[in-house]
Image (cartoon, rainbow, N blue to C red):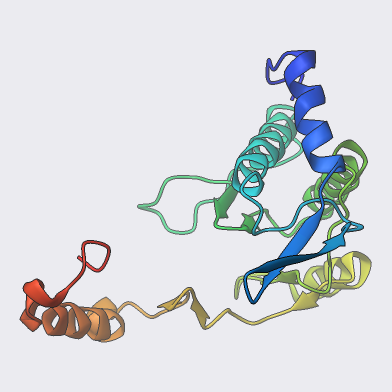
Amino acid sequence: MLKLGFSLVWVEKILRCIMSVRYSFSLNSDIIGNVIPSRGISKGDPLSPYLFVLCAHGISSMILSLEAYKLFTWVKIASSCPSLTHLFFAYDSFMFFRATMSEYMAIKYFLSLYEKASGQSINFEKSSLSFSLKTDAQMADNIKRTLTISVVHGHEVYLGLLVFFSRSKKLYFRYLVERIVRIKSWGHKTFSTGGK
């Protein structure tokens, strides 16, 4: 936070909020319990989304610095797409890199650096690798063994949308069009403001 330009006073206030977390529970209109979590704030905490954005900005800056030192290469998923190295969505982080030993070492260095800087550890049990079809099998196996992350041959669905599909996009996105048509036919007067 200091490197992002936050004052020391503000950083200390945020740290106090994180370190003084206590949870109570409402049971039959009574407030009971006083739980002190061992891992600081949780996802449901009102401060959590703001801290996630700050951490994501830090991660993004670290990845871009690796790219600036030519340790990391921008990847194009398709010829008509922009180049990218990472995406953040909700509480998920996606990193794209070429399956070479030098980029693998850069990723490993980046992950260890992030763990030291943030005090957070990467949960490799919830992480996964996915290789393109053109990746050398021996290289993919080396990366998989040394990173100790499970390999998936394609996430079928992410947040209700297909991740990998063939060139026939009409076939794969037809269900979305059908849902939109169905929603249009519903009477808008029956919806609440939030529903609309």
